[in-house]
Length: 435
Ligand code: DOR
Ligand code: ZN
Image (tube, helix red, strand yellow):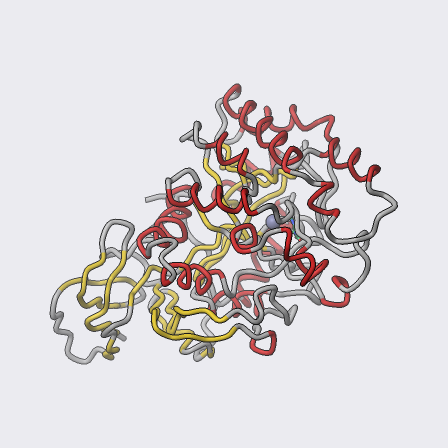
């Protein structure tokens, strides 16, 4: 079965060309002018843009263990609806993904139910390096939580040793949640008698994130490790990482689109670790995106149930969903002139493929997997909670009217989503590493 995408704007981080793209047996067979392919199903892409499928290098799809919030069927459907064709899932599930057995269990679940391509992080416990190395290419990277967060508690005492060992003894990307545990605990004491969501950004202030990031950077340099900082949120971190081109980092959409002013409107629904910040920080993150300091946009999609978010500050879990609307949010930003489509490809397709060494993904090139999203930059639509595909059933972006939406998503050549509706049940596959 062949599909011919006719006369679209084909986008890479370097250029946008107008042309045709032929999909054959799940791969991009040919890109060029006036491709002739008798028998192929033709899709007119005039005035539309053809992008590599989005790679979200940081999601929490919650399975196994917390399927009341999300599972591989609902999480991957939400991804597809938003033009995301590959996800990397985090280890804070139940059981935690810290053993080969847990990894295999998660893999089996995803294989059965996921509509998108997937890969897994393995969590570092301090004594599972052997398991991590045994897993080989089955793990995309190692996740280290320097500060406590949903489903994770850490002891700071062993952190330096843990990072040293990982940097020295594995060749994996070490992806770090950088918040300083000791500081968090001290600062929680200061605010213990208060109960408003605003204190979240005061407890976990910018120094909490910066201190941990600085520590991780120092250790990566000292032990020559491959460090990736997750969800950068502060100006100070952007300024620090601007100096270290061999350390990579990502930003989450909630740190780009919310400031602390949002607590007044959404309360604990925007409680997240690390927390939302000041306008000054948000501006610095956008600057870091544009000047190449930040390498990836990844959502940290963390679906929590409304009933859990509707409790008091101290009980409410941290995290918010994001995989479904990150692309429209960024496309709307292109329409507003804040960023270019080429930047989007660099940050959401090529960047993650490069950093994690994905095999034939992230680029529209002949021979590459036909993971493709077609977008219409003119469509204007309001985000509504009623339309949310993620099992959690809400989004912090509800009410925003965005211009620029995905209209078709292909995974390995198969059209799976058309205008937000799933049209095929194909399930995904792991993403091979290497060239
Ligand atoms: O706010 C967060 N929620 N930060 C994390 O690091 C984990 C996530 C979750 O899994 O809910
Ligand atoms: Zn996360």
